[in-house]
Amino acid sequence: MRLRCFFIFVFLSIVLFSIGSETTASPAEHVAVPYGPAEFPDWQRDLRRAEILSFGALPFVTFVSSIYYDVYRYYSNDRQEGYLPWPLKKSENAIGLSEAEQKNIVFYSASISVGVAIFDFGYRTMKRAIQNSKAEKRNQGYIDPIQIEPVMNADPTSE
Image 1 (cartoon, rainbow, N blue to C red):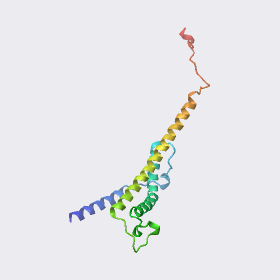
Image 2: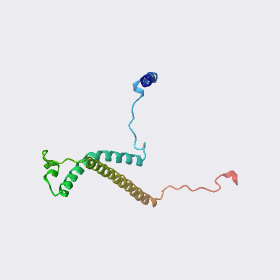
Image 3: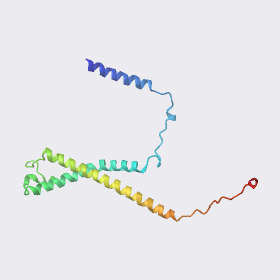
Image 4: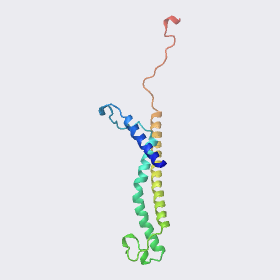
């Protein structure tokens, strides 16, 4: 009974809050503006790229890891017919993976995906640092053609 009252209270609070927070502004005033190139620092964009790479690579790495593990398992069990790799398996006599083996495949796949993302993050960071150091070396010998020199005693009243 108390749990039901609690859920009703939470539901009503959410409904009343959402009704009370409506604004009378027109939709034309709320126009979404895309992010600019200077909106986020480089490390945040690289970190986001690494996140996308790790999650994007995970299904492919898992697929390849499971195939490699099937081949490894086939040869480690003296090439018995029950342990044939995936495309050659026959459902009648195939020996399934244990729960521990499945967990290991997922763990290694996730580790490899994160490793790919870390490698890409490091590569991009080093590449940017090298480009910045080259730009600094190029600009180090640059002499500004306009130089302002102060004139001494330019004020006639000071003499």
